Amino acid sequence: MKKRNVIASIDVGTTKICTILADVSDGAPRVVGVGITPSKGLHKGLVVNINEARESIRDSVRKAEQTSNYKVESAYIGVTGRHVTSNNNHGVVAITRNDRVVRPDDLKRVLTSAQSIKTAADRRLLHVIPRSYAVDGQAGVKNPVGMHGFRLDVETHVITAAVTSIQNLVKCIRSLGIDIEDLVLEPLASSEAVLSEDERQVGVLMADIGGGTTDVAIFKEGSIYHTSILPVAGYQLTRDVAIGLGLPFEIAEEMKKKYGSVLPVIESKGDTAPAISKDGHGVSYQDLCDIIRARVEEILKLIVLEMPNSNYEELVPAGLVLTGGSSNLTGLSSLGHEILNMPVRIGVPSNMYGIGDMLQDPAYATSVGLLLWGSKYQGKKQWKAGGFGSALLSLASQLKKLFS
Image (cartoon, rainbow, N blue to C red; front, side, top):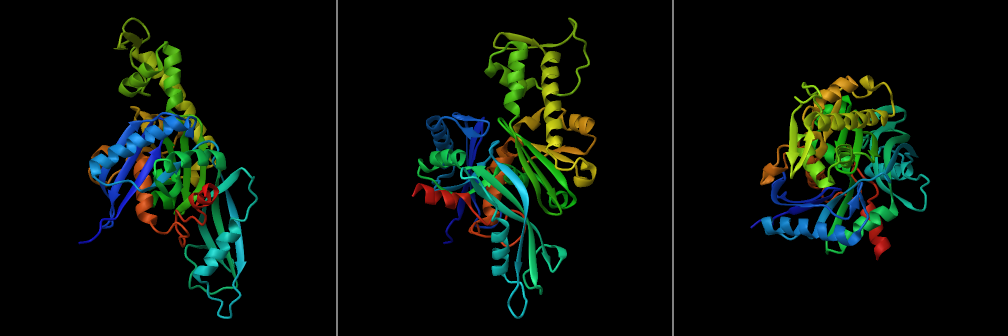
């Protein structure tokens, strides 16, 4: 009888913890367990209380184990937060063998060359992702292995993270007896769940508007072009509603989720304006929507400002894909098109088999994406030859040395 190959992902978010277990024995992931719990001890993607965060993660893992009857021994973990930074870097090596044939070892050497950048003592490499190669000046090569040449160049996207922030997250996971298969930048994971290959090739901007951060990623010619993290997201929406309407935070959150919309309200602000209430708190529906719309407009403009090129019609002709829990707001895609004058759609994870129906929601883009990343690159985290998602250095393996 064939042994089941089960992998797990844990999305440690600001508002929720989501653990997913999937059977990948037959190739495509088949979800066998899901555990979703409210998040405590985190703020804007960072651990601020280790004990509370650990217990939230423990509850989520326990629920996933109960529904699947499998034990979580290791998992793919998402990383986000303003401490994450990125830049593009160049590497070059000479092909010195007599036959001048590019071999896999040469790819390893050129990637090592590309990641030899100066990093501060409090920072570590998270990903070194090859964007494209060039052989003797011939650019745009996706896989140079087998080609002849004297010189091999590579353009890479280098992502670094603060050691202390990652250590706190790793400590929470490891204290539960769970090993870390890989640490993955969350926008890279989300893109696996919501972007098509055509969009990646043409050029697309993706923004995952979560609870604590908005994770931005640009893809061009099939590979990553730019990543950044904005410290503004759903939490600020709820806070604006709570302050603007004089509501407790929890009530404001429920009203935002149940009634929140960014579409214009037809009624005037007079007595005819519709009113909504929750637990004895009554507010104007138009006031609620006006507050949400104002903050969402700001977030959309900030997303575009993160682009390294102001000519976004040429850079991302496929437009903007919005995902994350806050993208469930009614009318968001229409507002995005109106404000930014580009194609905008809502990215929803799909093609999930097993008990994954509940995960077909933008709020679970990162959770599903981590699982897809794990099934795609399982057993290859040391080095992956070319293509999106290749990582020369795994921060998880570096941290093993720090904790040993």
